[in-house]
Length: 204
Image (tube, rainbow, N blue to C red; front, side):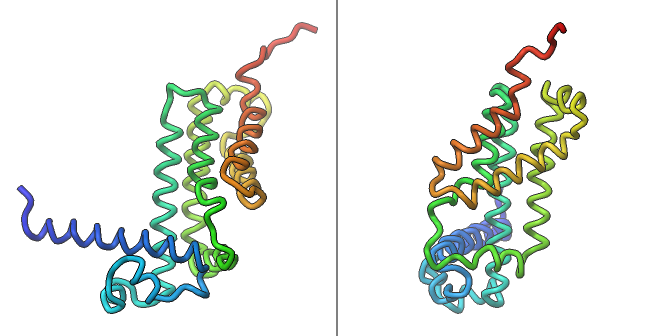
């Protein structure tokens, strides 16, 4: 049976998630500099005072919203990688799409400062989650037959994961749509997984 105290905790967590989701949308539309706490409060349907009860200022709200967003992206990527019934190529594409592709084409024209704000205000958080994503990629590679090809090529799963992540970051910056990102990521993952679809032994 849920106690009143537990109910209040759940309600508080839900309210906080609603505020963070609203903040993500507003920051994505206006960028960090042009976003105001008033705008976030309106988007979340709360008072300005209510917003300040949970977040001291815009900088704290941005840091918490970024961590909230990255947590969700990482969770979705890990779920995609865990679908062991799917080919590794499909899992890598889906994971990179969940991690880096889902917001392509949704960022407003005024939001060009988001990356700079992410680095300056929450650089450690960003690095932390990027490392966790690469670790998840590396684990999926280690648990697949591709591990043997990595060993033969003298490439560690961690290095392979870092290369895939770098490809995803580059495509994220250069793609005009999520579909374009997925096409590019499909080509990269297909090349990466090619040894799994080709004979590996050739007689001289």
